[in-house]
Amino acid sequence: MSTSSTLAEQVVAAIRTVVGTGPVALHEPSFAGNEWLYLKECLDSTFVSSVGKFVDRFELELAAFTGAKYAIAVVNGTAALHMALKLAGVKVGDEVLIPALTFVATANAVTYCGATPHFIDSEPRTLGVDAAKLRDYLASNTEQRGGQCVNRVTERVIRAIVPMHTFGHPADLNGLLAVAYDFNLVLVEDAAESLGSYYRGQHTGTFGQMGTLSFNGNKTITTGGGGAILTNNLELARRAKHLTTTAKLPHAWEYRHDEIGYNYRLPNLNAALGCAQLEQLPAMLSAKRELSHRYHAAFAPVSGVKLIGEPEQCQSNYWLQTLMLDVEHAVQRDPILKATNEAGFMTRPVWILMHELPPFKDCPTMDLTGAQSLSQRLVNIPSSSSLVPVVP
Ligand SMILES: *Cc1c(COP(=O)(O)O)cnc(C)c1O
Image (cartoon, rainbow, N blue to C red; front, side):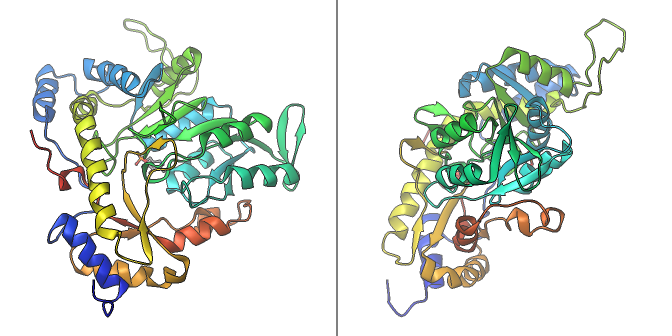
């Protein structure tokens, strides 16, 4: 590659060698299987809404795929997080540790419980929570009172920790589970981005007390909108089902609700789409892995950026392919975003860090230099599984 071309030009050229000429979306869904068939079957049955066989089937198949004992399908990933946190015992006035580097849904779900997000730092190795740094922080800023972790500064109970598996790369789960254990925190995984990602051979979202998935249109598979709660605990699974279905007691005709529930159930129509998408998931995952190999080769000669690969002993789903700029090239991020989008390749920076958003600006934070550095240096590039056509 010519040394006279700018880094932005080299990035555009490298993307072009992999995906051809634009326009190319960042991530688009693909409906290559039984989607039409199952949707028609669902319409023909007239069971399009809150009851029907596709919901049950989707839940069973999700459990089988992830290895979780139970999966409870809900309307979206945010609702899944809300319910998981509520079931984890998060109460009004609590704090919940979440990465500053995440999608806003993680922080929103904490506030839906009347709790306050407490933002923690991320590491470049996994793009997830930095467990070692968190351990030091909690050791000097919290104390145990009656089996609860109390923030010495705010005097509030820190009830839970919600790691997130950024762009499908598993966070340091062993490190985080140890922190959760040592500081008496419930661990709930925001696995919205990591369906098909494994940490030491076990599916993400199945390590914590609960894990949550999203099937929004931009995720690895989609139900239009949708989400799920994963858990190995039968009592929590029952509670999750009950709470997300208006807390109605089963009865042939009577409407009796024994607590304030939520209308968070996934409609059968969406579940029909989900069943078809799950059949396609293994092929999509191999396509996304192959796309990563191709990008890796294309970016190898470009100095100043590197493609993020899966962390050690992990298998990532490569939901969004991600470039990381070297620290000294961070100033090139915006020129790269501009050049790629102008060339028809949809790219985007990582989310604005949560503590910089108006609704969360007064929330407690630890030192966030890791997340701050990452937020200036990450660029997502086109990642659809359809960019690598599967040979039938
Ligand atoms: C997509 C996503 C969610 C959930 O999103 P929904 O659109 O509500 O399904 C939650 N957390 C993260 C990190 C996400 O990327």
